[in-house]
Length: 457
Image (cartoon, rainbow, N blue to C red; front, side):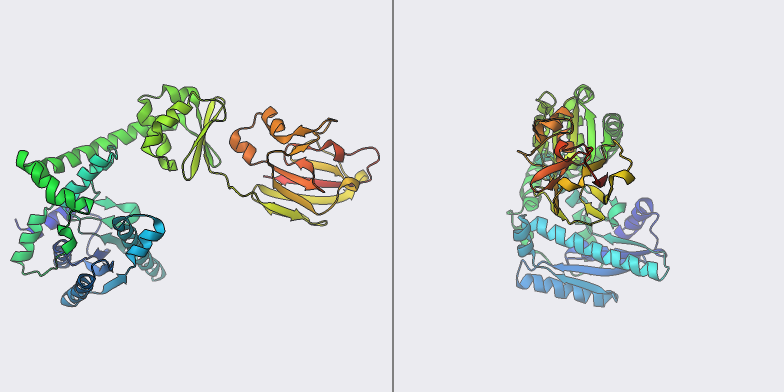
């Protein structure tokens, strides 16, 4: 059976929902043998497709040669060729990442833009075609990727290798079952020309080191190394499904979402088994690294208020709970409220303001409403987040109290404290919004006019 027949059989098994009649493909083509064979197989299978080529401008004249070759490939098959000339080095410098990472990010971002634009055009024209990007990753790429993941320490999911289908990203890899040698033989027997990337011979790139040195040396000891690793990929893929099912069941029993936060009882977390694995699965989605897993486990026995941060979130010990919360904004907002303003929108919600005579107001004791003696207030008011050192005279008290102590007495969590706003008048706090007014601005028998503020969170 030749490669075309095997390819079509594999397609029918793996991508049965994608047919020539209902599918449009964007083929990622570098000009190397892998992508040239992909174009030929797709073309002979009758699919509608366009060719996309990224010129990363990393190899001088060779990069220009590759671009021209791909353009000629489009002419040969009578297909549209889309080319993007990218400043890969600048992107890597700006994002502090490697050249390989920059090239990958730029490449897939561009593919997504094209596919999304096609989908929008189909929606306007009321067409229902299925649109996917196809790359030419093959079995040898998959083996190299698995080994790189193994030595990097990415866990069981990394050992499943390159995925053949990513529905959410509209991405397929139809050449994964086939080895590079099969593609070379197909190209030779079908008279297909292709270009060689000289950088593939250099071991300075991690993948090339595995491809050119490590795997050949392992093959001398284990001649079937490629086949064994490919077989293991399928076993790991099935094991990963079972693993994820078990993890999801435990996480569902542990984690309770409250707004933008996730709350987990400390005692339940400590009893999770296996603790290290479950802890990693809990923290992984929030920007934490595997190296921080042990730190988080120590947090289960830490003092109240202890916390660990990632770039996007914090994990906080709050009494009998662990709270995972988005990082707070470092700069507090300061909003001026002029007299007569009916409402104020801000990060914490909305304030409604009303000035009226005391005789016309029914005073409520709700914590979300403040009734203040208008004669004691000077405008403009200042709405801001509370800060260390703030104090006020809580209603009913003649002595001042630091707001930090006031919030501790309320037993607020660290994240709830960060959401507390205060309103100032002439540098005096008149209301800890949603909690308590200042005693100096309370309604008395002498009060004639009232400032009524309602807080809608």
